[in-house]
Amino acid sequence: MICPICNHTRIASLREVNEYWHCLNCGVAWRKKLQKTTYKEDYYAPASSAASIMFRPLLNFFYFLRSRYSERKQHGLWIDVGAGDGNFVSGVDAKRKIGVEGSLAAREIMKKKGIRVLGDASFLQKRGLAADVISFWHVLEHLVDPEKFLLASFRNLKKSGELIVAVPNIDSFEFGFFERDWFHLEPKLHLWHFSPKSIKILLRKCGFRIKRIDYFSIEHHPTGLLQSFINKGSSQKNSLHKLVKSIRQTGAVAVKASDVLVNLFWLTLGLPIIFIVWIINSLTERSGAFVIVAVKR
Image (cartoon, rainbow, N blue to C red):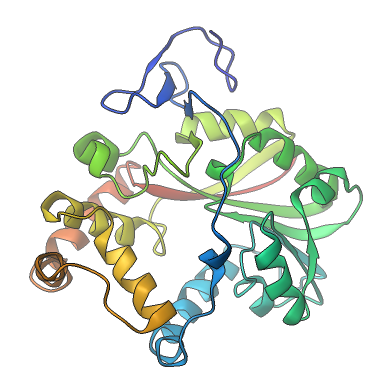
């Protein structure tokens, strides 16, 4: 067997997670059965009005941080791949916006917001869109063939355009410590898990040059760390994530009482631990998620 990223033959099952193959050279892991992830039609159900008001400031803060990864002062076209319901791309400072999304239900939501949409197949066939920015926010790991999407991005970026890719980090302290309790593992949804080394190799293969890597990743690193610690003491996996999602969509709490107590501990007394581990992991480049900004070579 040959690694699809670096072509080495040192391949083994990912420790404690038998669903994945793991390259011992570049560190990439991939599902032994690579098949397209499907989502229920209600996955992008609109949030309840009360929950929207409650979570909107936090979401806006995260979306602001995403937009700041681009160093361009003006954006003609911003393409967001895996745009979901379009909440992020609808708010970017760009004259034109395109949301690429495989879900028909999500594309319909974006159309109602006035966002131009493309399905996955349409995006892969496009050439010369001349985007200033193309972004993938925790999307690449869901794709059967991420290389095809990166090559399509290369074809559709301006010469001076920027590619922004955020992914979980399989070469992280979090996976090494939490293993199956790692929040970002998600074997049913994540077909790939990249290490910094493997994503650098893949981007170079697709014609990109790395400008910078952010290991602090404020949106996904500390939140993933928080949920991973909660998973260690919770009877239900990703209970905080499910709690937030249920409140946003229905306004109801759909989590066991005992799990609520675990969540409360880590959201209060346990927060200093989360903060310390987040800083140490980021400084040592062992964070659970990272963001890469790249340009055409």
